[in-house]
Image 1 (spheres, protein in one colour):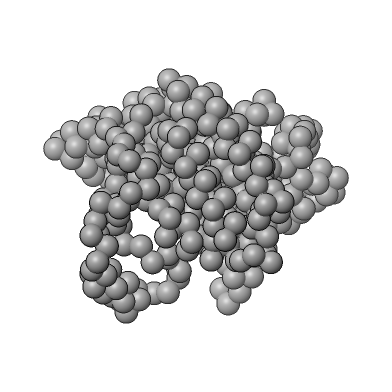
Image 2 (tube, helix red, strand yellow; image 1 turned 90 degrees about the horizontal axis):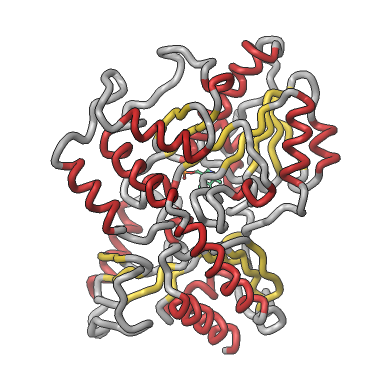
Amino acid sequence: MTTRTSIGTSAGTGSSTGGHEQAVLDAERWTAQNYHPLPVVISEAQGAWVTDIHGRRYLDCLAGYSALNFGHRHPELIKVAREQLDRITLTSRAFLHDQFAGFCRDLAELCGKDMVLPMNTGAEAVETGIKVARKWGYRVKGVPEGMATIVVAEHNFHGRTTTIISFSTDKTARDDYGPYTPGFRVVRFGDLAAMREAIDDTTVAVLLEPIQGEAGVIVPPPGYLAGVREICTAQNVLFLADEIQSGLGRTGATFACDHERVVPDAYLLGKALGGGIVPVSAMVADRDVLGVLRPGEHGSTFGGNPLACAVARAVVGLLRTGEYQRRASDLGRHLHRRLRDLVGQGLTGVRGRGLWAGIDIDPALMTGRRACELLLERGVLAKDTHGSTIRLSPPLVVEPEELDWAVDQLAAILRR
Ligand SMILES: Cc1ncc(COP(=O)(O)O)c(C=O)c1O
């Protein structure tokens, strides 16, 4: 599925690092230090591969935290984007445009829901979910004004806005940004008894990642999502599934909730919905939930713009084929099999589902960051999280032999 050349080779001379060093220094000089990027300066990409400014190629095993599920510059998505650039890119929601309804219908149908509220970033989709759930709580459930509570999980990651970090349990994400938004109760992920305990008459929603990505690709115990569904239904509480990272093919199904045949009350989507071209996010739910909104109560200048709708509609078209879900499932099985063989050989644990893995490097060997630096030297891009964990989420268009090659590189750095 990808345009391929030989694996792991350097097309550049590698002799001049001047441009590279200057680009790293300039980035440090001119930008806030809210990220700690690996020292690679990328200038081009195609499929599962990126190329740096010296022509060295790397297999992208992060894929924009799943924003690039369909690979870099997927030909069909690029074609749609190009055509749309030549027609119209922005209207604002003050006017309708000819890409809007078709995208919303196709996405709603993919999700089996009535309607869509398009936004841009993942955090905005989550904020939308929180606002809609609160309003639903007051107007439909009858929660006294200002009393709504939402239950969330420990080690969650739902974005970076002030409200969202208010219920983060990660000190780095949260400290120094108070005062915090009240109305959230944090329970242990995977613990149904704790969930039951936390819900009362004021509870309007449970907000969960079906698989916790940033926490290290943490898969809940079997039956957890189905249990949460049952509790929510029994207690008249909305189940908001943040499938921003787990959804749209990554786990081998359209949604991670599908693995337990669970249908949440709302899907919060982002990342891959924009096809790696434009930021597109959405809340997707039935009319009894999203129907609580009236004109002027919520919105976004760029949300649902023509370029976003055209690209995201094409993304929905790719997902409808089932091909990417199948690839994630098949390749994922292979990836996990190979990674499991490395447990005890430098890895202390492997988790995940589909083409998505959290791997724990033996801390006695090196940190996750060091492992990512060594992988970079060998032509593999990956990202560490929480000390010794690395997330692997290659584009779903990666070829089996490319995946094998990446695992070989991992095995090699663990053997050092
Ligand atoms: C599960 C989840 N929700 C929300 C977000 C926030 O998305 P964005 O960075 O587009 O705001 C992320 C980003 O990593 C995520 O993984």
